[in-house]
Every structure is written in C-alpha cells, then in structure tokens.
Length: 369
Image 1 (cartoon, rainbow, N blue to C red):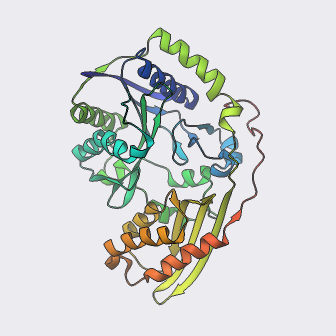
Image 2 (image 1 turned 60 degrees about the vertical axis):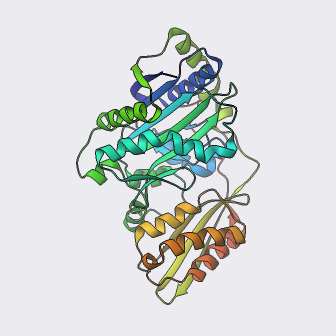
Image 3 (image 1 turned 30 degrees about the horizontal axis):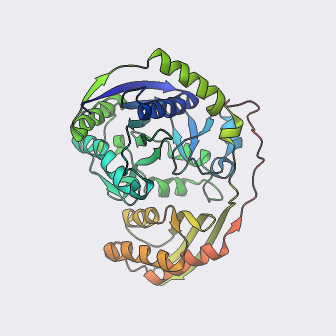
C-alpha cells in the first residue's frame, strides 16, 4: 500500500458521517474503494453512543431534543461522546489482515493511533497512548479511539481529538452518574479531560491540527496521502445506508438485554472523604468516578478512573488494576489509603441498582431528527 486517499470535511451530519465510514470501510475490504483516511468535523452538536450501548442510558435524550442535538450510534465500540466543530473526527479504513482479530485490538489501536500522537507531539502537545484505547496528556484524556472489523475484513479505526470542548454542555448531553451539574463538578471533570487549545494556550484552528495529524499519518504508515473526494458510486451507496440504517430508529434506539446499574459509596479516611460512583453494564464497570474532599494530584485520580473504564467488576481483578496505578502514583495520592479506595469502589459496586429506563421510543418524533 503506497497511497491512502485523504478526505477532509466539515460540518457533516452524524448520519452521513457514520454511513460514509461504514460504506467506505466495507468497500475497502472488497477492493471497490481505495484505503481512505477521513478527517472531519460534525455539525454542532451531536451525541454518539458506542455500538453496544443503550442510548437511553448514555444520553440525556430530553436535553438533546430540547437543544437540537442529534443522536446516533457508531458501528465501533467504546463509550458515548459529544461531537461538533471543536472535535476533530478521524476514520481510517484499511484492508484487513488475517491476524487482525479483536484479540489484538489494543495492539492495532496503538499502531493506528501513532499518526495522532506524533501529530499532537509535533504541535507541542505531550500525548501518549494509555490503557486500552485512550490517548492522554499527563493523565488527562485528549483523544478517544475505537476499532471495528467490517464484514469484508477491512479495519475501521475511529478517533475523536479534543481540539476544544464545552465541558458543561458535555455533562448535559451525557448521562453521567451525577445528581446535578455544579461548577465544582464541571471543574473536577475538566481536570480529567484536556484539549489541544488548552494545552497550547492559543486558539489553534481545527484545520492546523488536522494538517499535523495528516502529515504524521503519512509518515507513520509510510504512505503518500492523496487529497480526493468520494466517487459517485460511493455517494450512492452512502445515501442508501444512511436512509436504511443511520436515520433508522431500529438502529439508533436498539437496546441491550443487559441493564445498566449505578451505585455509590462514601468512606471517611484520615485525609478526607472518599465519594465514589460507579456505572455498570452487567458485570463490567463502564466508569468509576472518584470524588471527595481529599487532596491528591488530579492526573493520578484521572489515571485510576481511566484504568477502570470497561473493566471487569471482579474484586480480585479490580484490586490488581487499582493497585498497579496506586503503586505507580502513590506519592500523588497524598496519603489516601489504597485499602480505602479499593473497598469503597467495591462497596459502590455492591450498592449498584438498575436505573429507571427512559422510554424506548424515539423522543425526537422522527428518525434521526
């Protein structure tokens, strides 16, 4: 593979963008389309959930409807995200190899993330790959990634780079296990996420970030990027899939038989109160939120929270992962006892209860509105 087609777009609808990724991905696998890198922004704003999530549990659908925020479902896994003109979307579609199975998803993500990491590094952002699928800067998330193997055998790699982000809007869109959204909570979440503009301290354009990432993908994959657009046959196929799938309630609002649960627990330690909330899907920890009035390095807390994303809730495995992060960053926890963290997480898991589901019907009144 000597060349990859580069398609750049801005202000695209969620339904078109997701359809384009699926159609081009399938066609790359069959040889009908050439390997393609899309670097784009969505029309502000949309809330997207991962392939296996219940949208009623992940997004505040009433808020989205009231504020004209489109919702949809990605073909790739991972968690719910908000997208708009401050978030640079990436879709890389490559022919698959026989060994490209989900068992080596982390290895593939690490390889396919290289262009983003080096592009951000070139701009002066110290980004590094962490855990299963996150790219962090000093323990704070700046890029989320996902991967999907198409029926045709090709690989679709998704990523969202936070050039900028409205934290309060994000918390209003995403259904996090927080009772209310206060200034303090916005500040706390801000310490777990970062963005390119904040890291650089200047109003860098999305296009400048896009160009840096594109340059470094060409270098990382040792290919020439050729700026082109879609063929007529591709556009026809995209329109068909958009209508039949990504504008369809059946796809967007499908539900899993596994109900989500939320739980919390508090514990008074010698150095302050621990207040831990968890979100569970079956026996899997979707997220752990560590709060309280203790003093600790925010990046250490963020790293521990990140280590628990999409993690089994089995006590021995939770203990092993928490302990690994704690030993690595022990001084940054400022005397917060490890046993207290572990026990409070597990008590929150034990306290988790099924949340009341929102109506499964489309609250928007029409597909994809």
